[in-house]
Length: 256
Image (tube, rainbow, N blue to C red; front, top):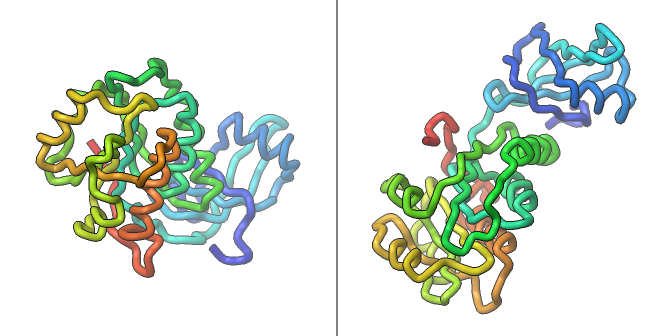
């Protein structure tokens, strides 16, 4: 992003092109007018996950409504690392979703395992969390959040061509750095269990899945959310877009 780019970034659903007019949501209008005290003709940056990032100016047809008038493109749309995170929901699920968005995941897949304690997921809140995180970290897309699945259907529907690294807290997995260096893959996913760990029957099922490979994060026992983010950071450092060149890129429409 250039130095002259607006400091406020907002995700919108509408198409972005020169001269387009995009209506702000009520929440965005409140944020701009009453929190940030923006006035007509003040600049903002907009992105929608499809058309790149654009400079726009604020217009206020009424005291409560805001319309963005799109001007020029700041950045062309770029791809997203083809990285999925499947995870057993935990109490601090917002932290997992927020930080996973910052770490570049393209899809978030909640999985209900035998030892999962959290039974209710506020998907509207999670969607808002991913949008806010994407706005803050300057990525040009927002992760897809899949509906929650039970463990067995999740495994049955996992794409066989996509490597699934699962965090084996029993110590039976390969060190994560070794696993990622042995098999540099641009399309993969990580599966993180709940605070109580995977049931033995679940570990047995994972061991039978040809695309699955158990990995270890070392000798310390990590909280589930810590383990998820540590695994994503390792992948980014060894295979993802933290390297000099951008790793595999995903078209989010390919996510089932």
